[in-house]
Amino acid sequence: MSNSAQIAAAIIGSGNIGTDLMIKILRHGQHLKMAAMVGIDPASDGLARANRLGVATTSEGIDGLLALPDFSEIKVVFDATSAGAHAHHNKLLQQYGVRVIDLTPAAIGPYVVPVVNLATQGDAPNLNMVTCGGQATIPMVAAVAAVTDVYYAEIVASVSSRSAGPGTRANIDEFTETTALALQSVGGARRGKAIIILNPAEPPLMMRDTVFCLTPPSDRQAITEAVVAMVAKVQEYVPGYRLKQDIQFETIAPADAHLYPDLGPQGGLKVSIFLEVEGAAHYLPAYAGNLDIMTSAALACGEHIARRLLQGQGA
Image (cartoon, rainbow, N blue to C red; front, side, top):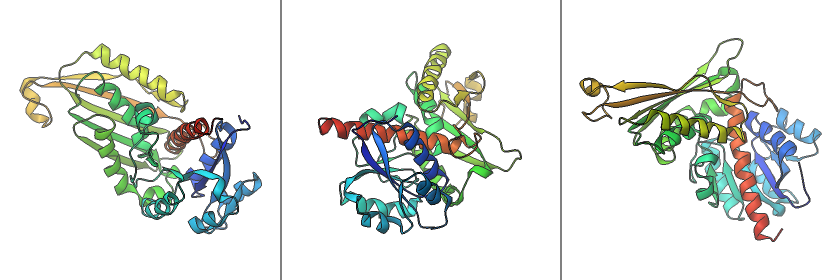
């Protein structure tokens, strides 16, 4: 869908994530329109596809973007490169007042998960999309935390090895650190831990995420209702996001509380949530839900920014 009043956006990074995001903006952008695709490999499929779709391109990285004749019209830039490169990109773009959405684990700006905190963080100059595992699991932790204290949250994200490009592999350490911190600062857990598994199985498996929360003795029905409601909210921008099976609850008796350092002597409850994320297959196969949830979340943030900018222009 498109309309006459739209904000111009560019994407830095012509790999899997950047290309999928470009297609999403072209197909579903309401307040955003694609202005440029930026890469560093002239032979990349992302740049070739952008050319075929009529999107301006440059293979000269951030310098090429700044040199484009229509750069002054670009108000939103998505960075799908690497954590290391993003710091340089952001420093330059902020000088021009460009709003930046960071799909790397650099975390220069606040962590943002649309259904959890976009309303409160959406006006920051740089928004960080955490990680694919964070986008999938933080909503579940936040749902539990809305009902009861979450002493500890642990997530395991299993993605197909085929869907993990060189950028993802280079950022594995940042993935675990960034996701763990966001489980706390966004999800509301007192302590968080994240694990990622690159599954080499053939045929490739769908993205799966497991969420474990340790809580005090709590209302199981209230937790279930909160989680189911949150799943529905995520599905509004990631249709392939779903519970794989019923939520599981395990009572931790006081006699066993010593086995769980985050629990007090009174014991508590272990909540286990099992998720599957099927991608929309805009650019990559449906098993690459880890990419789809990142680009879908980024698009949601971009649309929020564009809408606010248009409102400020009186559009």
